[in-house]
Image 1 (cartoon, rainbow, N blue to C red):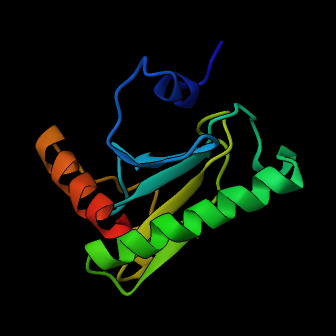
Image 2: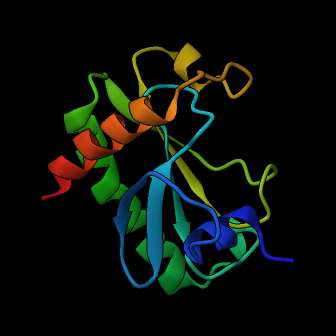
Length: 130
């Protein structure tokens, strides 16, 4: 059965897309730890980040770096935190989280955001990628 992220890649589930290439996709987390919390995934469904081949792994990190730079310009923060947890969805992914304090990286404290807010945030970040 495809992961929720594969279903997003296939267009079966909508997302607030930030950036996309043939190999990677970045979109807002709908249950964010902080405003601008973005998920970056390879489009290929591979369950564990360290099972990615070296080329795909390096590409994922390079793509994440570009997205992180845009988030940092669009969302007021001290820096962008990076987390790879790997337990919640069986599809390799990177969390990019705008941080002002360590509390912003708390995966047990999720923000509640409506679709309009997520759409506005995604537009702000996408604008910084141009």
